[in-house]
Image (cartoon, rainbow, N blue to C red; front, side, top):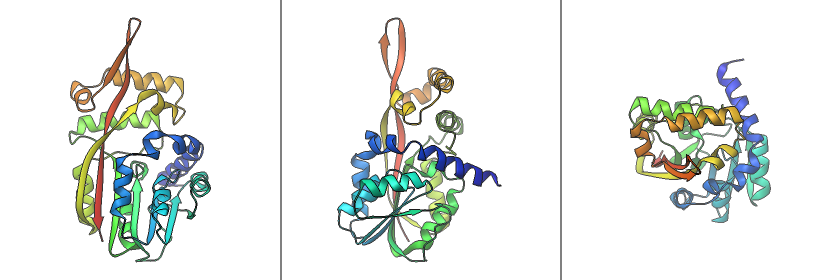
Length: 257
């Protein structure tokens, strides 16, 4: 079995067990970024949401009245959660890097906070281009790391400790290069950030105590440039200063086939 196959199996297992937490998590179930992705697809009638998770994007699209909204994920539990929670969705258990859909099948594809789990992002984009009809829209969002390789690796080290299925978060520049190479045209790019409450962020993946301590040690020793860029917030409890939250980089892309 290949490493990528093993990793994808681990992703499906890890997120299957976290479906309820992802359904109820405020970071994912609401926000201006979610509204923006849906707005970018406002003219679509047949939409595919790749790595749907608990179905927040697919559900929001279904509520706009699209003719067909497919909630697709590698985890059967996530697909079941999405189709149970949101009416009008079709569910599909699929690999984002090998979509089992006909060429030119959809006029919009969405993907939100998931691509950092994909072993081969370029294969994902190639599949998106294939299943999008000419002129179709990719509305895509993911975590973003600084251009500085050292800071980027520090962030990814934290993410892998928190979630073993994390592959890599990339810079805005890298995604734009991949989009251009694939043949998708980036028409709108919006940088933003999300404030993460550290305890809730760790709870969502049920991180073991030993790894929690390692993550908090890494955060405490983070380079000053990262602390400034991610706006670390602390609180004083007794004689101990504790990191309570930070802002992680996020980028939204609208691209057309």
